[in-house]
Image (cartoon, rainbow, N blue to C red; front, top):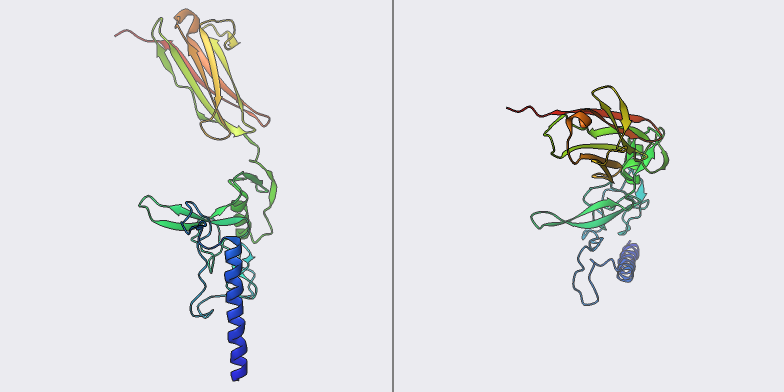
Length: 271
């Protein structure tokens, strides 16, 4: 019996020593530089294995639902099959709270100045799921897959799911003063990112595309303010009621569909 205890103690000592050497070699010693000064924004916190051995560590059981995000290696060698990987925004460390595959434990600083470590996805690009829903990154999709028991959801392709244009901010009805500047704006989102065009119908029912040959009208378009959105403006630099009064329509177009929104420009009534 005494001989067996000596073998167990020797095994634990060797495991701890090997872990210390491995951490020193890979720089996982708390993010210190060569002089021992902590590096700002260092990734993983120091690995602190349980002081009482592995008695306090709860190893995953054989149930398939025990680790919906999968198993990851246990650096303290307490669990023979590894530990449950944690999802995005979960509090983590390098010992008994590791992040799931494709996530990393990163240092964050809260408003009050306190420091904590949270799991963050290594990928930042959106992906399209088989449910035609856009996920902000692959990790979000993996967590959704876990909720589906891994049988009903998968990645269709990288990038957002194709979606029809959506008018996020429609042009508003305006009353212009003669000789003054008038501006309509329109914001559209969708994927592929829509293009915006403008159509004008005057009080006589005649329709034309803007800016046309009117030198007093200018159109500007730019991407944003959000990803996969575009914003456009129609500027009438000198309002002439007999020329510019009527209906202005914003058209957002992509390969999926077209979305429209209209507004009316009238003459400001003098009080």
